Length: 426
Length: 160
Image (cartoon, rainbow over the protein chains, first blue to last red):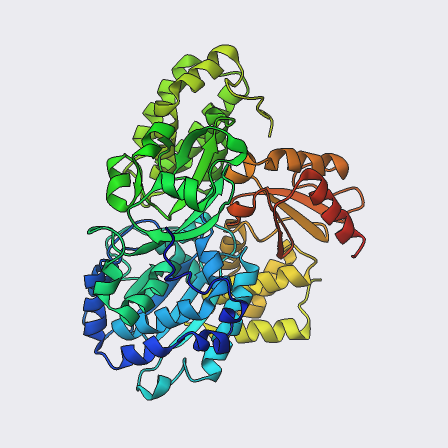
């Protein structure tokens, strides 16, 4: 069953404007937050069990508590560089409920004592950027941003920064490099951004959905938020569902929700009544699940880790039996090869190499030993680079070739797909 | 010689003041150059921008080359970018791309004969629930078929 927390008012056009947002209690939570001490907000967020909704799932309250207490200015950076293939939930939130994000950000900024924040939005999101800019203007005009917000004595400035087309800028240190006006190349950690981030200053980077959730945690309290979800995966989550289902879209459910229920109930089942073949549960970096595995999957951090995959950004790609796995791995690897920033050898060389091998198989020029070679290279690409992009290419590769090995072997032997005619040249 | 309009120069001055460091203004200013230069960033405009911003040309080049949204060569008035990532490919993006390519007789990243259209394949645009989809200049076009995509492009070429 869907839960309407973050997505409650998505269907109302007026919710986009400040006036409309206020009709549904908008910015009342901010007033409540100002009546609390910053430490109380941080502990409420810690108690809520909220974990980062962008992909890594790191506990938000804990991330905030890493900030050094040395009086240096802190920055809050909202990660709206939604680029993980299959993910579109943040775009919808920025378009439908921009003030919900802004309110969550002001509360978060107050909690961590930050005077300046940026919303870093991917460059392609032209419309969401326009909506956010309008919303920010409204917020400034109503004294919700700037000096002495609502008479609280708290000052905060917020701005939108438009990226320019680079998946790697969704990695938090890559995003910081980009905001500094450089190539979006990730930096070695430690030091983590909370210690040394934007311009070398302590910086907290949180996803759009995470920051919006903070508003609801402060509005209803940590206990109420925890009523949804499981013990270790608390709260609700926005899932972006696409592929061969009848009703693709964004759905908000409690963490721990059965994946099959999402497909059958929320998404109206498989399109054209075809058979389920596989599901990518957390964006294209997450190892694929077979139809059999999908039956026992619940959508929470623990279950997906147990299944050898991950919840990631909550992007679910549903595939029916008309899909060729060799072909789809080629498409996926083209992406990672294209997006590698080129800093680290295992990633720069590895993503290109495995993409070429799979392309050769698709062209009918594969050799049986290529499948083992794919496995060997993928394993060497993992855990050896500055950021996780290399792993993000290697993990799905291992998933595809392990779980659908027969399709890869068939393709090599016969020089064609077991499933369908593939556009080898495209 | 490339030069920004007076409004463009004022925009650059404002962006230089907007962030903590001048360097952060490079991305927004490159966007401005691109839009005033017919959709791409020429080598001479990079030198011009470097002087205008008083920043090393290497810094501008670094940003220009890294990000895909800055066009390295001239593009048509309509830049048709078809998402060719996983969900879109599952739902026919490649067949759609090929249909556009054949209809307008142009290859990928090439200009159409009349110079009005450039066709590109791009990575996930975050609109997978409406796949297949494409972006033309700044706007998204969703739930496409090969025929509807061609019709949209033709209508735009004819200025409707």
